[in-house]
Length: 409
Ligand code: SF4
Image (spheres, rainbow, N blue to C red):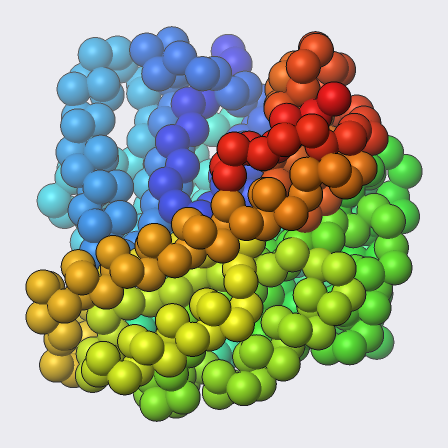
């Protein structure tokens, strides 16, 4: 009998991509996805541990599944991903109803884990789950070789392992054949990708050349690997989105050094300016309240934001993670963090609105995601006055902006 799988994914796009791969492994063993948890025989919980809050959320979700499991015999619970990697098999002691723990480092062998459990059929040949989303994600590398002082990812995902280009492009082709129009290539430091003679710029062009692919994006790049070759490729290839989400984290040289990011404020701004000069919109991530951050350091971050005029920025309050160096250092007071975050958010909002306003009067190529909305190449949202077919790229004239949305003719 076909098992029905309900998937609950927490965390980043890497996890969304991992869930999709795990679903394929389940589908090969005769399972099919369902959107209805009550109808499901299997729950796959894919978890995140980047912030303590995220891990608590995943574990408390697991706790609530005891009743779900007891409601029908034969139900299976799989706890996967980064929190599963960090907490490991000891989870099974506290949650005895849990069947399978599959850590993020072992995603490639997820099929083997299912087979070893004996809970799934060993017959092959079940239909791969058909998806028709406009956008889907493809992992090109796993793990990270950096050791940023605040980050738990290298310890849960391990060192970098790049997948062979043939494997990546086969996955892109499969998704394109399923009707996916926009591919997002994923890796913790995606632009550090290197497999034999293929670098990330080569991979990006090859993905854009796959028949049926209308647009390619990527995340998350590291500023150190934003090479002139890569910037040229993004600039010149019409299928590659003119947007880069480049995590800055701070504008203070002192804090960047302490974070072990590998660049200083000037190197970062030079890279941002090179991207902008190539017509590419740049958004970012910023951490506020990193231990030891003074008013002067915070002002350096504000100066970076003024100079870079990011089209968007995710601003995070520093979250200490056990097992990272930064967790051991003196925290900035909550009062200062809240005040700084407020100032930063206002500034960031102003520049994001300006990015939208600057697009008024221009023609934009927009990938239609829902009948009345789509995303321009620079990752700005556009609303249409009339219904459009999802998955098409339409060229529209932008009539006005409200600072968070563009309105087309
Ligand atoms: S580059 Fe730094 S922040 Fe990003 S995953 Fe690696 S260690 Fe974490």
